[in-house]
Length: 264
Length: 346
Image (cartoon, rainbow over all chains, first blue to last red; front, side, top):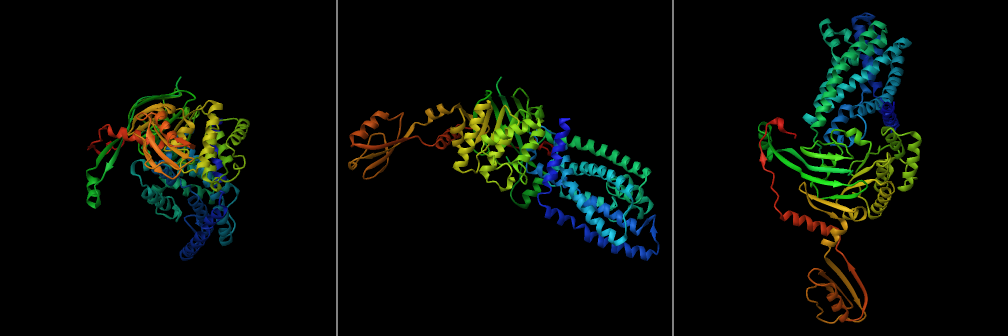
């Protein structure tokens, strides 16, 4: 019990810490406002040009709420890849290892604490804009199911990003990998365009990859909630969390045993 | 049971060698050359429970590497070590419950939060009872005189104030062993004194062993009973601090003030005259070559003494002397060797 409560305490401390500069938190979250406005202009034109109310089952209203949630997930992602790689590069990982906790779970609690308020602020600002532009959001079941799927998405993102961060053991600078990961999330995760608008072959590839379980799954669930889709999303997340979690544990064990501390 | 037992501990790092310029960089890309650096060489020592041991040496001597192996952060290349009966690199997390660490250059307090928040978090991390944490915080707050600082965000504290909070935080879980890596770095004289006093008091009251690394001989004089001096990863000197002083503090400085003017051509055999004023002289001599009483006799013959000050050279000079002596004994220099790309880390 005590071993769980220490991670809960780390989470809480990061949560409080993320409020150290409330102005910065709000300022950063306001970024979603122009994003949503631009998306609205683009998709409004697209839907008008297509001359239909819905494309592959999504209306303009659905698309906008989908993009709001997808952006919220993307913009509130923790910087765990960067944090971990910096810990490795500047040697501070050494000073985190001499406390009685698991480094990986410490980072996890930490990244969750960083994410929560950012996600909340993004969702609030994003919702206000989208509500004004296209009308009311989906019903309560959409919020509930999406919320659970977002937690899965955060865990999955953590596994991927932390793995990238630990790559610093081998390659020192990981910014290229972060960049590639982000672009994959943009395109194959369905961040800019809902995957439903892709050709069938590309859809099936994208839907098998972890990126869609992070972004597309929860966002799609939000606009058309169903238990079938929910089960599908959660299962995909569980499979990828298992695979990437194992990879993460292995990479960590190997990295730590060959640890060379930078900077005396 | 000794708190620390180290036997033939060794750590070798491989570092990439690169010739200057673009050509060198390209060559290093295809044919990497590595230097092995022996940061710690066959180090053996013991530390008793509750002992205050100083571990000093110049930059790059292997102090921090040794401490990192003793906390289990680094795996040694060879050799054995036991800390509080744990093999540190095998039982790192179990050991962590019993040791406290302060790295002067790496703050562990959360920068944006008041220190008390970090202390409460540490209480959770070390699995202490909430009530016990409260009690302990008030104890430490008193010992380190930080009652008024605990609720200020750490970023607003001065370095001296912050270090007091850092050391207090490292003692929260009542460790049996405290590892202090340069705790007084960058502090002013008063802050240093403050922190030394508090460490000394806590160590005595709670029988905590302290292993301290420092560049500052003052830390050593104030805190430690025994000292190990290392250089190039090897022990060059190991003894009580008092013996160190007795053995190396053989030079005395004497300042004398006379009632009347100092006679012209004042000199004493075997004594170096540093300065002669109208009413005073300043001199230096080696007690093993020139007996103290003969110097004193000469000084009192020269006139009526009003005031006299006899002082030892600062410990820094002594340590510098030991380094120089150690540097004269030849140490094999690491030879560059070629290894494959996989052999980068050892």
